Image (cartoon, rainbow over all chains, first blue to last red; front, side, top):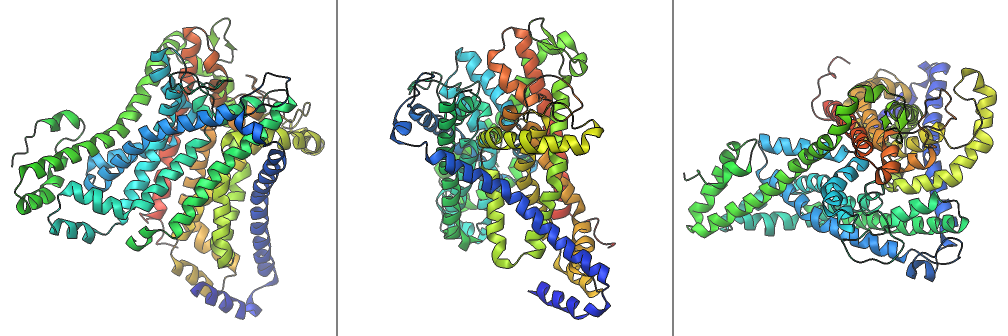
Length: 296
Length: 344
């Protein structure tokens, strides 16, 4: 508000501002608007193309059938969608508890050097390229099992989920006022009970936001799955076997020379983006109406 | 107090002692209130479990380093430092030099920075300083949306929309006007270093602009008012009062974007052409460290081959860690500690 007042004050003294300075000011505004347009352009282009190419290709067969051999029309990505669900489920089962636990440690017990070390570590872990995580999951799981598997893919994605969840959980728990914890101690609740039933409970929607964001981030990951889950042209629900995943299938189809596969790649991309944007938007709405706003 | 609890030394390798001080307060409180040893045991177990989770985070990083180092040993012992300067990548002869990939990664990332930094700063300045309040929320949401799009979808879009566009219009134009620089010559394939740089630029704009926005918001309001009071126009206020104060933080955001660009895999792999050559022209196909791992890792036969790929991964890992640490320090210097501000 004060900003607006000062702006008009500046305009009041317009007589003393030279033409050149005013022109520069307008030019700067114009350039800023131009950059916004230039940044939004690819976004609009991507979404338009996704919808335009994807909607025409999504049909019942696409969602329920497995891929047909090259040259045969039809077929779908049902196995890839199923595979993605399995891999993401494994990743969440492994990654979410560890991430939340580490977040609880940082906010409730972590005011020491060890806590700082963990904070720094998780920031570093967050910046590790996903392809490198893939290598690690490969040598941890695939080399031991001697074959590609959904489990290996899940481990790779879990490693990527942990740092995000850790930091958001810590942030959200720190938002909970100390007085609430003290009130619980005052009622004679042991510390672990206070943390779980009072502190964590108060911050639930914030913590869920963090989990969903981590989930959305790994849901579209392709690089760490290339040599862990590997991909599969058939239905497979065995976690110890190579498994198809939606992003992998999109990648394989996109770089193939076949028009039919290109069409399906667009359809798969549309399904994937609907899942991810849906998750992110749902989280945004939940946060806006969320209960943790009161704890701020 | 009976704090010589047995499990402690075993589980926290790095700092076993500091935990004790933190624990003393609340523990003594709860033991005052409820004189049950079972409550204390539960507390200790819970704390232990949470500590285990936190230690897992540290363990993961150690594990990553360990696995990368162990599996790249063979290549390191075979080639030594010449691995990073060698130009020859020949799996059949088992000769491996990573120079073309390092070059490709650096050039594509730098190109991305050159294209995206002005755009990202422009967007951040517009959202924090110029745009009407009602537009602020939707605008930042939209840029966040750009960050949520998976890399593979950027690649898909680039293959079918961006690359044909480059091949038919942009590259012939660049060759005609700027061909004399040598950067824009050769046949316009569409696919190549230029395409990779543009896709990367689109992908890192949201990162740089969201950090910049954060940093600009952290600049105190009275800085703006002070410059206005001296009779500045809005642009002069932004230049003198805001951008100058936020410099270090903006550079931090840019470096963070660089970190992302260096490690980005899928979109680049799909459009860069995947040929291990060093060419001066940006139209020529190239190869990056991340994409060679993506393309060849699952097909790598032979221990040396695999080990060479892991060594590239290790190098990539080290570079991104250094870049990220640097970026965090610079952002932190603006948003929390405020040393360089007093003299303006």
